[in-house]
Length: 284
Image (cartoon, rainbow, N blue to C red; front, side, top):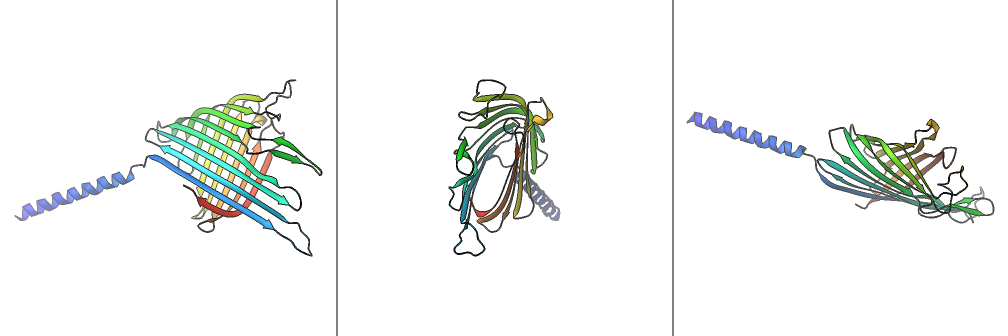
């Protein structure tokens, strides 16, 4: 009788152990499906002077940023779509308000999962601005850009590498198109005709890094490079860096540094930096 009880106890323990193992294996299974995220940031700064002996000019500025990500992760493929919308204005003294930020950027990347790290992909990106851009002098302003003037579009295919959740990179053959209308962003200076489109064939490299420095500090970096492989100094570079610190549930401090170089547009590199404190809200 005791032997029967002991045997039943052993069987029960084995069944319990197998159940726990099965549950643990079930918990470790990756979660497939859509993962959506949309975050909006609104920053506003204002200075007002009234009979201020040390001097100064009234000023204000505001900027709205919306970052969205819609990702469908499945066992055999991953389809990631990202979007960035940024627009802001500033005004100093009695001058008219001017743009401080203006960007629309969309990216779609489809990756076929062959193994854990290295997988083939196809990608499409598009970038432009929302409203007219101006060059200012002492007495007047000259419009120099507009929506889809210029517009940049890139299609690429190649191999992607993702060693961990912090960094991922891809390298492939690419087709880059620059479109314009009124302004000479796509023009070839060596021809008499003013071209409205320019198509370049070459190689593209894109590296994304997302690192959580601490519980409330996040660092994101995206380095995009394109080359027709004609010369080393003709590599187009767009390097966007963002550090965000979460002060409270709805208040963030952010620092953005963007380096841009395209020899067809300007012989020197272009640099933009923004330091902002404002409201942050997760829409999705």
